[in-house]
Image (cartoon, rainbow, N blue to C red; front, side, top):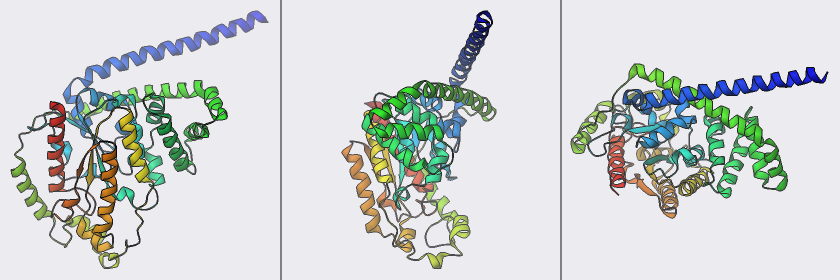
Length: 402
């Protein structure tokens, strides 16, 4: 009986050891292949430009490699999808800043999710990182719960929580907000338990996390392996559309004249300088009903506290962000009832938060009424993106020279 039991134990341990060995060998293979491909620019340029890619947005390895390669990392939301030719994905490297650029983010990715990204060890001490902050993020009472859940990265959450540079205070805030936002969302059970235990901030909570530590460590390790596999797969796919980064010779003044002409061509059917097809599809039929409709809109979203936490986590992790305070379409927002005084008050709050943490910033509130600066009512357009491209180039050229 004992002999039979011993044989079963030996077989079990042998099976586990075999699985671990296979995983170790396979991970080594992935590391080698990724390293080989990532140092060939043809494999990486397309990847840097891709919008709405969960491997990049929810992973760690692409962020780490982008930082190691000296890329500017541009965090943002839906504005990164702009089809305007002046979108940053088309403008780097250039004669002002001879560095490539990696975009990270998609619709509904805001300060809290970006906080987890900048709080990872992949971006510690990163000096070439910028974030486009949209005024619309701060409208209402809170951020979009479903948007947060859809873009939540369990892997980046664990990475931030394991980073000793990020303070207990910051981790506690992130866990409380995560628990609050995911509470009524189906799934995410592992995160809900982890966040709930951490927010207890008590002996009971600590005991629970200690008991579950082996489980969460294993889960984190599996997510790390998955990130490597997903990165390897996407690198193979992007090789089919490979483009070698070329340094663009840009005359910014001439480029701005060209952007003006493009805007004039695409904005001809409305008084708001909104691109024609956008106006026809989203505004034309209801424009009379929209006058003053947003006059009671609150601008006290919890997003503002999330933004301050983003800045705090950046500081703790040695990240020096460049805050791009994107303007709105002033003509449109005046029309719907969110007047310039209200908007300026919000710009002021965002600017003050950046100043308090010593973050460099670009405030675009003086561009609200400039024709062709915006593509629609909320996203940068031809002149807008070009101006931001130039400012990013000049800012990080100075940072690089220090």
